[in-house]
Length: 225
Image (cartoon, rainbow, N blue to C red; front, side, top):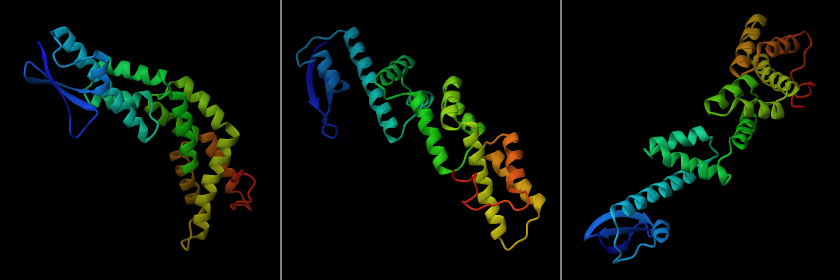
């Protein structure tokens, strides 16, 4: 088989079309073309052509992966899932993940730390919910616990729970509709549970914010510390 023509694509100038024996054979990124040193008039066998096509798929997978994580950081599980959706060969996916990990484009520990920080910036969130969310992202249990211990130690979680409860309690007290104490307790408990706080924390917070004379302003010693 003979390479009869190599022409640059008009819409994607970094890609070329390769013709073999007068017919279109494969589209390649210029980096893959350079890697194999392919030129017009070269003889290629079937084995070489398969290697070229494999290298092109690998290059394309890396491009897709870098574009995907360029929008925001991703976990390894998320990236693998995305590449499987694009129907890349399993070995190509493994090679791509390894390449990104070795070049620090993919780091589950850094991802977990960033995820927790972003979640806490949006709203007070407990360790249970953060742990569950990180597990769904495929983060290793050891990494999850290390990151949570660093970013959400117990005393900080208590403060976050008080902040969430106090915000809702202010709404109750500002409302024209009277809400009795038991309904307030139930709604506060439900909110804190949805936010991922454990029941020991919830009970302690409810006792604190619902006790007679409790403060709910930002001056409360447990809020926004």
